[in-house]
Image 1: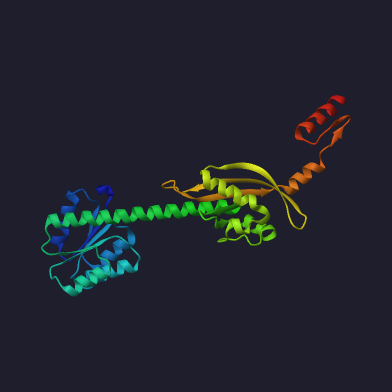
Image 2: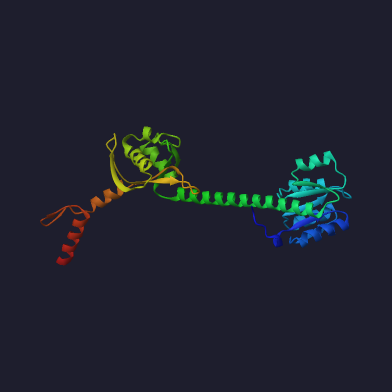
Length: 295
């Protein structure tokens, strides 16, 4: 149940009978709701609605000029979701059905008892509070999803997400561009195991995560393609879990092509120095130290 801060609950009471307006305003105010403002006509009510936001509108149906049903209709045309409670001294099945059709929260017959008014107001405001909370959570979720999608698109690494059945669920732009060259059958909806081909290690790492529900640390792989090309990757995989219940959704695969980088590194490496030989990083450091000592 939503806890309401009654002192920050804006309520509009619309009725052409001053005594009723003041009575409703008094009942609601003494209950702690506020501010509670009043209007005697459709026009006055619309002027207030256009100037400020209300959490609840209570309106008589039968008024001079435009009716409470007209007000309800106009409020809904404006896209406002605040609950409206309709009041009438002449209960009528047609007006009641029209009020329900237009989304009125409830329908009270005069004379309205204080207990009925307060109970209906409380229920209407609680429902409105639940709706606002749902909208807030939906908006927050959409904002978070947009944030993730922005990151997903901007990361330079190739990212692929796979479900329980090893079907590709998502691919970022980098992965799509890479797949167009090396794995043309890799696409959203494809079975990773079926299209992996020379890149069977992708499906293998995904299966490891599926089996143990633990990440596969980044590691280096080399692949020789049918056309004679040689590619080198840094590859890692991790479980994809739900934010709410930590349920297992699938696997996210992250990899990057380091073929060109390693090729450039090899070109700049010494294979020997005097009587020493080797191309490892450690040997490169030794060569540099010896060279610096000689200087």
